[in-house]
Image (cartoon, rainbow, N blue to C red; front, side, top):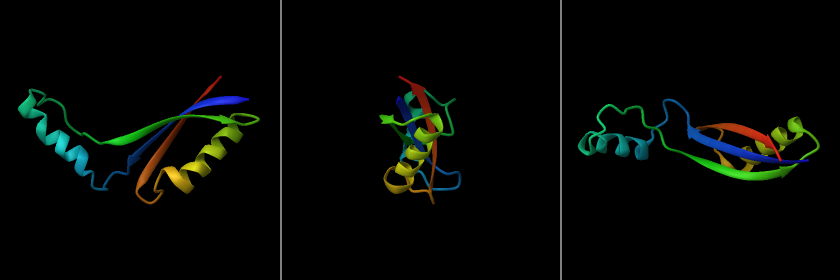
Length: 83
């Protein structure tokens, strides 16, 4: 079965996010002073062929640990949709 997946990766709380801080500091000058707590991450869309949802999640978690994310500094959220 083919699963479409969205993998969201963001820095863990307490880890410096200079890109998010730069964006947040510019917001008041652009008229968005009510926006705060900006954190920048990445979103990756992909497809995985697996026998079931649990297998797809395991495979994607392995991929994240091996290549896509730094498990020491980043949190990963995997969302699956059956094709």
